[in-house]
Image (cartoon, rainbow, N blue to C red; front, side, top):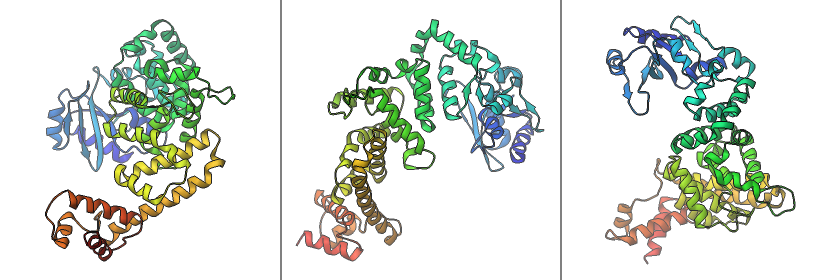
Length: 430
């Protein structure tokens, strides 16, 4: 805490008062160390503050310009006060647990009982003010996201107010820009995807941002189990959620999105009817949510490829996939197959195959890693220029083909040194 107060005092030396606010204070109250601190300044001109500090840059994107920088080794982002006082600013924040401030002298400003709500693990609209929802209905999704992520309950008054709002003004949810939906959805599913989607279902807002997921509730799984495809999606998200905190591979944004979109655009449990139309639908959603194209490609690769791993996969196959999609993408798809098997109850039928496939992938990756160890960080034993010099070749497609073939030879264990690489190349042109 002392270091953070020093940051505030450093800023106040420029003549602008400053407070720790928002997620920073909430995290400190919960005993969590923030990686970056959030500040509120009474300055109207961020550029003047940046100039006075001699550090930081002003990011003018979005509705609220932010000063971003580092002071005393602490990364920060600072926003101008909304209103004339810190109390005015806090009143504009949607949740009480985010409406707390700390002054440079260590004093707490908590006009809406946010610390009390943190201790009691409840999510409450700031000041029990339903007008905050009327001003921006997306705050409903933020409320659910925080409840899921922080594993807190929603305060009865806030729940009642939100449900009453949705009963008469649910159509206003359609006015929320898709990219804003996307930001909150990604945050909501990043830590507690199962809990977040359950809350969205409970408040009947799934149709507003992913209607096709809602429609899966009406499609039986075909196993006479009484379950629908929607139930199976929730099961997959539940398994993913149970492993997120301990498995770095599964913390990939693409991994959780694949769980969310796994059955979208299909009407069968095994997805045997999926095709390009389903891929287009998923792509359209994620594009509207402003998700990067490379992440979209990873999601589709996982969904379309994970069933491959329920059969024995050769090292050659893994090698081709690693070279085409990246090692991370292949590791994610294999782990996704395991999660689906657990979620849908057939892990015992495929555990041995999945373990064998994981072993084969591990061997391929180990061989590629050995190249880096032997070459001080290079991904290949030889560059294209070195291949041309060794074989007396001119630039052209053939050089690229030889390099790709050499990659396969390395991944499958046929080549394990620079000398072996040279011998392999000479053998291909003999």
